[in-house]
Image (cartoon, rainbow, N blue to C red):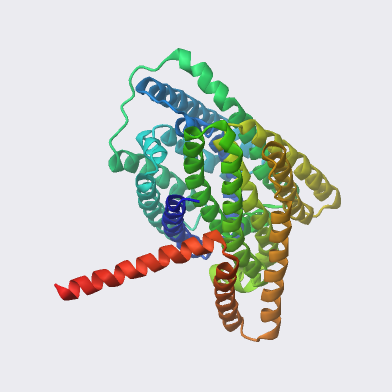
Length: 491
């Protein structure tokens, strides 16, 4: 696997973690100013908002990145088509906000929706030259936009929460971030100036996007339908607990997954375009093995620790008022592990321009989650939904492995079983340390010392590519640093 992919992935990871870290600080502060009910209101509003977000992400970026030839007419057609769709979505949400709020018996939800619906329109006006830079493996503009806009959003959210003590602070933070992203997208790269588009290109554009539309429609129900069920059949407070636990858990996995999968999508698309079809199976096989190894090393140890030390982690991050979400937090940690593998396959299917596969898998996910939700309603117990998420994520990963085997003859069952064994061993290790040592702080420190040393020793002995690449990059950086120091002294 080329070093460029790893460097781009790590660069994106560090930058996204920095931006997410700012958001994390905001969450820790705001969580002490607001109540679980406030987060429940936002979570209900985000059911509608998330639907709009998924409808706006119907393959426009993927089309640009995977297309071999691009001209101004093609880009202009995408710009106008995207803007028209986003404007329509904004209008629909604004007009339907009252009806949805009445159905959920919450006027606060209506108020939030009328504020955050404008986020979609601002997204439609974003500078498309940022996507073109990504296609060229230049992620600097995207990184700058993410960091600068997050700084603005954090400041607005904290200030608003301090003065209003209301759920509106979270909505205003979202709106501020969208406005900042729009402005910075035209500051960090030259603005894209659309010319006349082509109506002839709209049809093939939408034909490519239709599977993304179907896929995102199903994925919306997969990610948000259980929020709706919890809010409708249980309470806003429980939804607030579930929403907060999910958001905290996914902060790490989403950034690792998003960074590596985004860099890999660009890298894999380019490599497949530059090679003949007879080499595609080999390229995909090498790519998948490497990315699964990355997830094993970066995801499993973190979430096994968080699942065992859930109460310690939650109390440390959010305070004693949120300690009740510890059991939910533990369950969502294991769900995040399974989901991180699923996204690897999702990226590969998009890179080979087969989004319909993701749609089929998303349909299977919806069926599994529907069964879990029916059980929850009948038993009046939302825990069926939480356990159902873990089972569903594993089922989708297994189905993806079967599809890959069918088309490349690559058998990844052994890799999946190996990952499950690692989950068990890291969880057992964390449990033994936590139950043996009285101080959770000391046992946590000991856990991470043992994990890091174990990964380095095993990585060197078994010649795990990702660990060897990390050590190589780290040693080069250290050598370069000391060479510069020596050079400065010599001068």
